[in-house]
Image 1 (cartoon, rainbow, N blue to C red):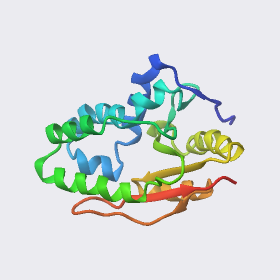
Image 2: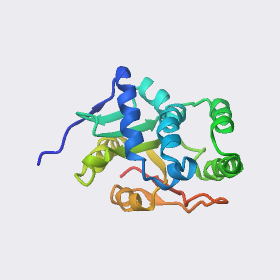
Image 3: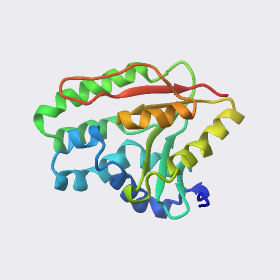
Length: 196
């Protein structure tokens, strides 16, 4: 089977990118910790993914997709900015009250690992539609950007929200920096990749 090519997502494909991300994260431990009920997850995840990274990434041309959007990778370039105040307000309005403190503390802990002294490319979201998983699409999407990072001598960074994905990231040169767990949250694993 030939693996699909990877291309830059177009602005008008943002809704489809968010749909694929939502499907890909339907069993993700962190996403389902935030939205335990299916209806809440389906309603809130696209908006959260968009605010968290997709809107900025797709605008700057740093969202990459397989040909038919079976898989997506949403990267934030160095010096990208997201509206943290809008995200905080959204969390207050949409998350169960008992999760809000844990989520705020989780953001604070992940921020401690996020490199600040060097420019980094941040992999905010990598996901494959479950129907198309186990076909190597995650690897294809990762290779597309890690080649560029190597060519340009840039550092990559991510926070894995699913322990099952850590081996994929290790195969692509990322290294575990530690583990984060706050209150009732699942474990988050920050990982860094120096250029090869």
